[in-house]
Amino acid sequence: MKATLRFGYQTFVLEAEDALKIITILDESSERYEEKFHRDSEGEDAYYTHHVWKNDDKATSLELMSENTYRIGKLAGKPTND
Image (cartoon, rainbow, N blue to C red; front, side, top):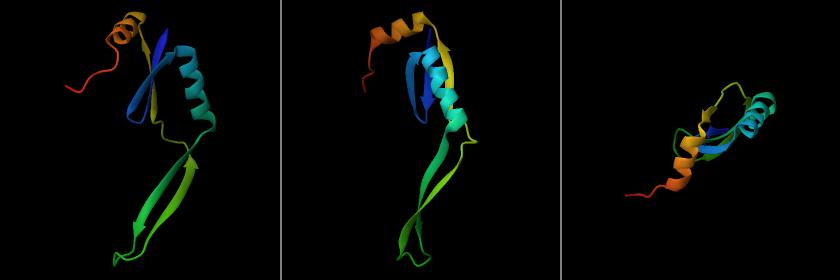
């Protein structure tokens, strides 16, 4: 069976067992990272700060996909920008 796995704004299709492994790894051992841009009040000096923290936000989602839906999507291929 296939599953869809969403990371941010992109969705990937893979075997359900593999998707579950990825979700488990992310839930158990990943940390979040963010780089933030700052500028002083006068707008002259700019700098970045780097932040790492426990992954308490689940930004991924896992949904099962039927074989029929997978085959139809595979047949349709990559969408065009009409």
